[in-house]
Structures are given as C-alpha cells and as structure tokens.
Amino acid sequence: MADDTRWWLAVLVVVAGCGRIDFDVRADAETRGFDHPSFTTCDDSLALVGVANCTNGNIELTSATMSVAGAVWAVPPIAITPTTRFSMEAAFVFTPTGTGADGVALVVQASSQGSNALGVVGSGLGYYGIVPSLVLEVDPFQNTWDAYSNELAFVVGGDATVAAAAAPASPIGFANGLPFHVWFDYDANTQRAEAFVSNTGTKPPTPLVMVTDDLTRLGGQAWFGVTASTGQFVERQELLAWKLVVMP
Ligand SMILES: [Ca+2]
Image 1 (cartoon, protein in one colour):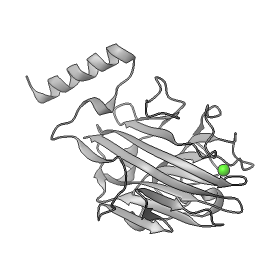
Image 2 (image 1 turned 45 degrees about the vertical axis):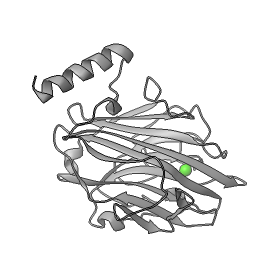
Image 3 (image 1 turned 180 degrees about the horizontal axis):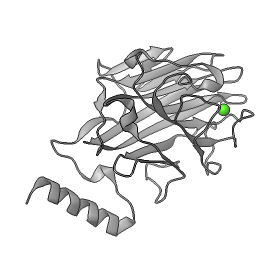
Image 4 (image 1 turned 45 degrees about the horizontal axis):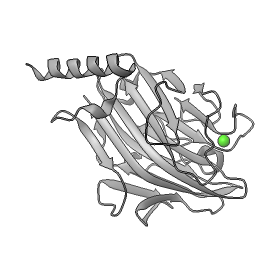
C-alpha cells in the first residue's frame, strides 16, 4: 500500500472516530517539525531573542518586568507549500504580578529578520510589526481594540490592533498561574487555520476560532515561533512545552 494511501486511511479513521483530524497520530519520514516536552537544554535549534531565556526546564519568554519582549524561533525555517498542513501545540504558564499582561503569540512568519525577529512590547505581544505573518494571539489583557479579556485571536497583518478573527471569550483564564495548552492548526488545502485552548493536554473537539488564509503568501518557507511581552502591567510568561508536526 502506498504511503499516501495509508496516510489517508489513518486520517479517515481518525475523522470517523472523533470528528477531526489529529495530527499527532502519524509519524513517518515525511513528517517534519519538533517536539520539546520540556526545555532542560536549549540547543541551536532554538533561537532565543530579546529577554527570552532557557531556565529551570522552561523557556521564560518574559520575566515580570515592565515593557520587555522575548521570543523563541525554531531553526531552520520550514517549507510551506500549497498542500502543507501543520499542528503547533504550546503549553504556557503566566504568573502575574497584580493585573497580568500582556500575553503571548504563536507566530508563523517570513520576515527578513528571520530568527532574530522581535516585535513591539506591551500590547504588541512581541510580534507587532513582524510581517508577513499569521499570528495566534493569547491575550489576557483587554486593550480598547480587544473584544475580550482572555482573547484568542488570529492576526494576518502583523498589527495587534486588528484581529482577523477573534474567538468567543476564552473558556479559561490565562493570567492566573495555571498551565494551559494552545493549538494552532493549519491546512493549506482548505486555507483554514484553527485554534484551540484547554487547561489540559487534550485538544478540545472543536476549535474556538478559525480564519481563512493562504500561507503560500509567505513565499515558500516560514519561521515558527512564540513571542511575548509585558508593558505597564506585567507577568512572568513561561513556555513549558512546544510541539510542531508538519506534513508537506
Ligand atoms: Ca491585549
């Protein structure tokens, strides 16, 4: 049986079983990406930018310090074709000091800064200005342009004040010291991105927010990363685990 046939059979089984495609069920030579269940060491496959640092088995994207930004990018960039699909999962904990802010973002970008990219601090979540990009905001601080506190939103133009698609208010709070998981899935065949959030490592059955976007606009390859920032209000923002499964 051809590899492609086996793959589609696997997908059909999963779709029939739970109503969605689980990117985690398959691994073969064609699957690319990475899996960091923790960060006991941070090697050259992780580019740390700004105030981000590798500490105590986690990546501390920001400390609880005013107006700082940090990011981590996976090295090297990954090809994006008209059939690429991927699932990115990240686990975080935000430890606020008073009102927690500003949040983190899962970012797919093809800026000329590459693995040195870092956007605006404060409400820019460390990604504002990184273009071209598709961003999933995890935003616990409601600015005037945010629809909710605890907002999960896709941004297609690198502008944190213009959400392409905001979810209903997140069913979980972010800035409360409890770990949570976020998923950012994309299928170039449908040009659809989906986002999920949970306090556990089990992806919910339905996405909280979706957006349509053609990621071939990024020009053939993209950097995958996580950014974060603080502003007037602060929280320590740690990346606990990070996984990416890409099917070309
Ligand atoms: Ca905000």
